[in-house]
Each structure stands twice: as C-alpha cells, then as structure tokens.
Length: 62
Image (cartoon, rainbow, N blue to C red; front, side):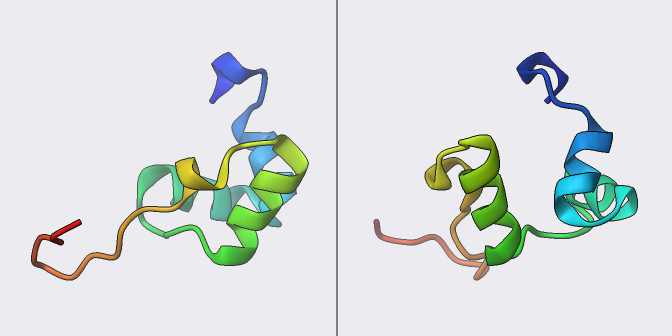
C-alpha cells in the first residue's frame, strides 16, 4: 500500500478509523461494499481488485 503513496493512516481516514484499516489489512475484517465504493471513487482502485468471490467452502464452476 505504501508503494502507492498511501499509508495505513490514510486508509484509516478513508474508512473511518485506523483500527478498521488495520483489521481490513490483517484480514480480520472484510471490506464492505461502502468501503470498496470509497476506495474506488476516492483512490481510483478498480472495483475488480477490491471484490473477492464469496467464501462458500466449495469451488465455483466459473
């Protein structure tokens, strides 16, 4: 993230708190649609890079 000129503090400001940013970066919390929307609109991150397939326990036939 820092290679893109952004820091965890920057992400915390965007998401509402440094703790939320830390939780997202460590995998303790998933991005919500609202968070993904903000990252897409304000930082220009493609939505495809922010969306992961649902965790269902089985593989998709996609």
